[in-house]
Length: 189
View 1 (tube, one colour):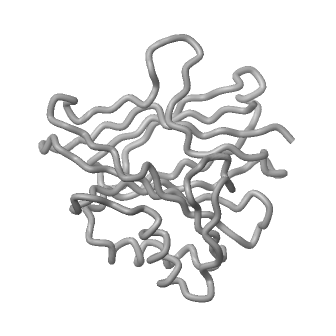
View 2: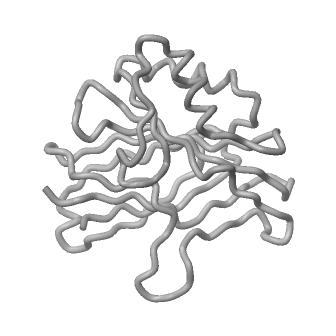
């Protein structure tokens, strides 16, 4: 099976404030077990966005053949469909331990939160393995975290015929609150 890769290219905050401490929480399907999902948080500690950046950060360097911020890399699912959700948060804390965030989610899920693993999604980011049936609980758990919630965006993808002519496709959407916009790229390797 070929590998699929999700990269973030650009994030724009659509609010007046211009100083942010941002981090992502990503959920996606487990690469080897259809009854499980993966939750990961990154970067650690967070993205510090200052006023001179005009609420815009580009993760992709200038130049030919450059890559953006790698969210994950894994084998293509057999059905060629991947379900992925991305949550954006602004930390109110001076420092942020994203491993602690995963541990708190695991504690809240109880028996539906399994192990925290590394390198499960082709990155060094720690990831929590959870039961797929526990996914509806994630939104409520995230509300308990005392950070500003920018909502979520669906990055679901069906790797159809459009990928036969282009190995990489750009996507963009606003987060559910309308307060931020992200551009991302799905590619097949």
